[in-house]
Length: 130
Image: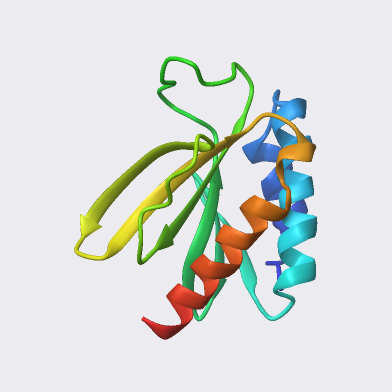
């Protein structure tokens, strides 16, 4: 994945004081970098966005936690043309017809697994053709 000039410093600032969440993010980035080397990443104030022609996924720190969410976690967000029914989906909404935004909490690097990566591949494919 292409990264901006100050990517590493920006990532460290984004996760300042949150080493557990940083470790989960690094696992996510490694997987996305391997799957989508042509993509690019942008660190913003409230999220880290992943693009391949269009935005297809984002990583953020939960601002408001819902009951049952881990105390320390990364929120991985992606959009699909369908609603995913899975206990792993922490929240889902349909902001536009046939455009579902999904949020998954990941409390450890092991949660960046084949199932999540499958959804992220589908999200990337959906974003590229829209």
